[in-house]
Length: 448
Image (cartoon, helix red, strand yellow):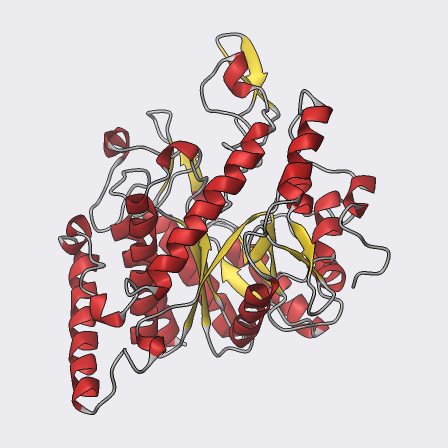
């Protein structure tokens, strides 16, 4: 895989979606500082995730990849991280309880700061400024100072990722994820929703099962699997200088790992076969994702498999499809069939968010929950009809009670969007909608 590759070889390839840094010397100084800091994750953790994703690839587990659209420097708090984790744990419990399958939990967290943009600039009132590219690059305020790319933000992103990871590790191994806590994960505004009521039934069932197990002498103190969970981090590997600075040579295997996250993915806008993002990620041993939108071809999908996973290792490559509810039936079957016939093992995951975005009359970007569910159901139906395994879902969500996506059991409308519209970029499912989606997925899997 690593023939003619090194962590810097991407610089000889065209790199899309890179900021216009005003001072190369300052940028290089910051990247050098980051390169000398400890890794955020460890190679052994990435290998474990790859093994778990191999189970998904073989149809023995599910992938739940979920989290923020774009993390914010101003929203770092223990409560925010905890509530996001609560929702993901709730979704995982609902899926496992309903299907009997283990769920591989991967967060869009502790590094999801950079955002690709459809245009490098934005114009308001005849003033043209650089687009907002995420807090790792610049700020949302529309003025020249805020929109100037600032290399110091790369170091701020590293520090926030480190703090977030520390808290996630404490939560997932320190008792918060104990199955005896399943009722406490149900936040009040979720508990009062139909999805929350359905979740309570599951929580009651788990509580009764744990009571029975305790009576039989099986307790969470003696069985860590009952009070700890494996939780992994991921983000789009967009800023290649930052990713290179966090790439380390593993002393045990001699392989290169991008230690900014356990799993990295390539976006819809950066999956050019001859581009720098493919070149960089082909050489690191992390499990990889690649977004496939409605323009992706079967030939391109197979080429991506050949470049990113030439050894055909199960768990190495996940195709995250983001087609849109209205077009998925016309585009996905050909891709799945071609990859299946090629013999390349991939995890198939559905991103039902990005292909279903529209602008409401209010001017706010939103997504209709019914479209999210529709694309998800069609994704599972297509895989059932082709005899392939629909491995999981990839969604943008928050643990907060936001009003960014319309619909769902709460029946949010366009008029409700402005009530609690808090995202910096794309609209996210709130906790109630996220849990409701998990129940829809569970229903589809029971049908399989």
